[in-house]
Every structure is written in C-alpha cells, then in structure tokens.
Length: 127
Image 1 (cartoon, rainbow, N blue to C red):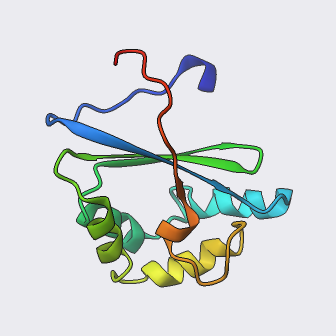
Image 2: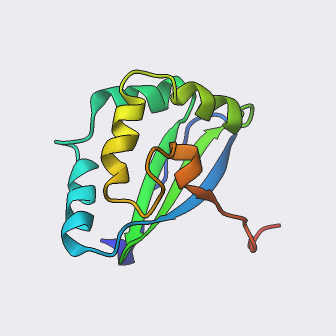
C-alpha cells in the first residue's frame, strides 16, 4: 500500500538514480491495458532481459491518473545515452515500444528515450 511506502533495494555498490515522466492517453480502458502490459503475467521477458543487459539495476513505474513517473537505478559508471542506444537494438525492443505507444501520449514510432522526459531534481533533503 502506497501510504506504507515501498522498500528499496541495496545493490551492494554505489548507485545513481534517473527519474522520468510521461503522459498516457487520458482513457481509462487504455490505462487499464497499459497497467496490464506491465504486470508479471504480461510483461515481455525479452524486455526485462534487455533492461538488465544494458546495466539497469532496478526500474519502477508509478502512476497517478494518466501521469507516469519512472525511477531507474544504475551503477555510478552507467552511461544513459549509450545504454538507451544499445537497448533500442535489442530483440523485440522496437516491437514493445510500438505496442505500448498505443497507450502513451506520444508520437508514433518514438523510442523509449524520446517518450520519457528526464526530470530535474529540484530538492534534496541531504545536499
């Protein structure tokens, strides 16, 4: 339950975090189908394997209405641009992007890196 918080992982190595956002189409049925596409039963194994293969340690997506917020944890030496370029070439990745694009408020044929907008951290309690 959200009010109880979500446990975070300890990866045993220093990590860095990326935060991104995206809008879904404002349609309850499409949002339901998008959520279903990401559940354990329907999420494509090739996509999960590809995310791990490019060095991502953890990826979480949160939703509020039709607004998505994604958190990506990666090692300190992780290079976002290189990883996203490699991810785009992996098996079924473009097929997945085309599939989920039908739910997302984005241009047809957009890559994951084009759809998700990187967010700027504007506050950090322990600067």
